[in-house]
Structures are given as structure tokens and as C-alpha cells.
Image: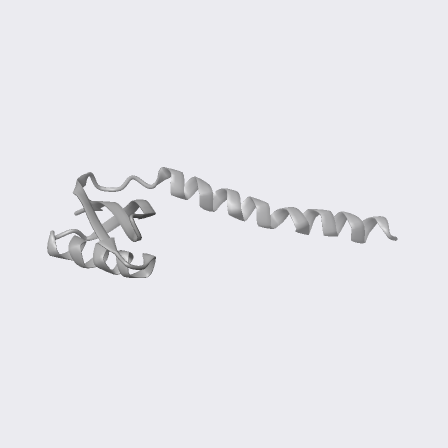
Length: 85
């Protein structure tokens, strides 16, 4: 009788891993539009840098951006991103 619940737990325990695997496969298949350029900003905080990236991407006519670099340099935060149409 104990073998059935243990087997059931084992089967149910592996289901989330299959769901995660399917999501990862979908991300790998995602093919974004070609990049239309890069943007860079300097700010005092990481949050402000991301806000500036968003504003700058919108000004350049981009529909989206992908942050490629975010680091503290010279007491400021530098952020770079690729922008997409």
C-alpha cells in the first residue's frame, strides 16, 4: 500500500520539471527582430538607469530593449542596452 503513494509522489514531483523544460524551449525558439542600435546612460542608481534606458529607447523609436551591461563606474551607474524595433 505504501508503494503506490511513493510512486505517485515521485511522478507528481517530476511534473514541474517538465513544465520548466517546455518554457525554456520556448525561450530558445524566440527569435527577436534585428537590433536597430545600442544606447548608454549614466545615473545615480540602477533603477534610475533603467528608467533612463526606457526613455531613451522610446525616443529612438524602439519597441523594446535588452540590457547588456549594468555596473557601478566612478560613483555612478552605467547601463548599456540593445534596442529593437
